[in-house]
Image (cartoon, rainbow, N blue to C red; front, side, top):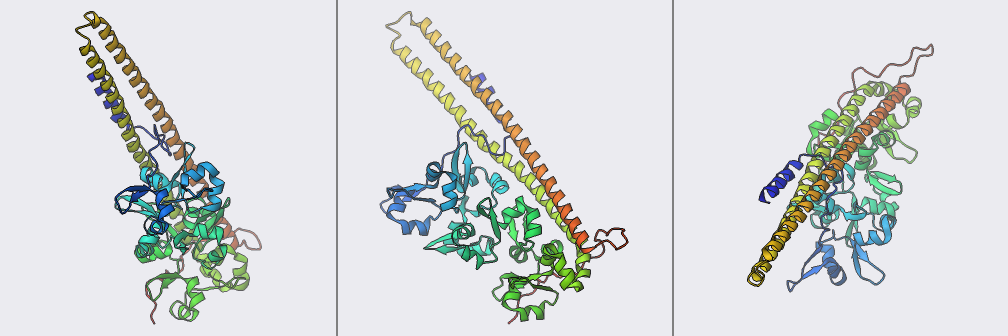
Length: 482
């Protein structure tokens, strides 16, 4: 029996080398977060007790305990609400409760980040948050308890407080769109009734960002996390000058980077004096847009109103296309790396659960054998002929245990085969999406070339917009002087 157990354990560790799908098929889902804390008498209270008895304390210490009061005024966690009201209610009443489904049940972002962080990075870039002492907390926790750090490290966490609690831009744009209109730097738009920030759009729909929102400046860092231009100028200005020279802007007196449109709205005299290379014009809503925005959005306006911009625009088409190609390729490579990291994380969690289940089966088998031996020892003097019966019982128990182990391992093998197919499907989906995005980029570039290099009257077609690009006018090197 020991030899069989050792062999099975060895097979277990070999199994971790096999593929696991995008959303891990755990033998049993890991437990939900156990929200709660100790009160003044060192008695542990769950989140419902705290929300019902000390709501101000919860807002101040645990704003990440998502939930609401039911009709009987009992506090229920977010996953309870999903099961009762389904997704439509959550989206309509609490878009700030980030989470997703696993095997028909809703789990919050904290749970997904604990067990599947790379999956989150691939599928939910709109779940803002970061880790503190090994535990992931959503943006509301950081904004309530570590606001200075959050603004310094995550300027893309757009939102504001409301009645003592911080809410992200998705909540504001759903319930108070007038506040969103007052914050034009909260880049984002609705998709199928749900508001998503610019990082989500650049990951899943870069073609729409390029054509409809060319002023949503930002790019993915090495961890495949989307950062806005302000973060890049703050943390890696040389990289911006090399890769995104059209992100025009400068630092204000508080050393906060502002884009050119912000400067032209707030201090056009200073902008004209210090950055004469920022050329642009006002749209029909009297919002200033730079030449890069107009190039993407309205070629006719440039040809009719600002033909003097054409040489610069034409010269920039080729270099800008190369920049966008590199960015798209870099994004795809990061997604592939994140997918592989996701598989590794899921393998580790699956292995941990598998080992725990295997150990539990071994313990149960040992307990049953010990109980049988104990009963046999007690009755030995009275049942001289019980040896044969006892041997049969032991053999039956071993046979039962071996059948359980074989079934357990067969289930694992079937599971890993299914996981491998799912992982391959995710890879194929990433490749297909990347190919579609590449095709969209080429189509967009050809449209731009035709718009700014019209064919001569006698035919012959336009050229591809090559040549030397405009000077590197990044405009981010100096801080505003007063």
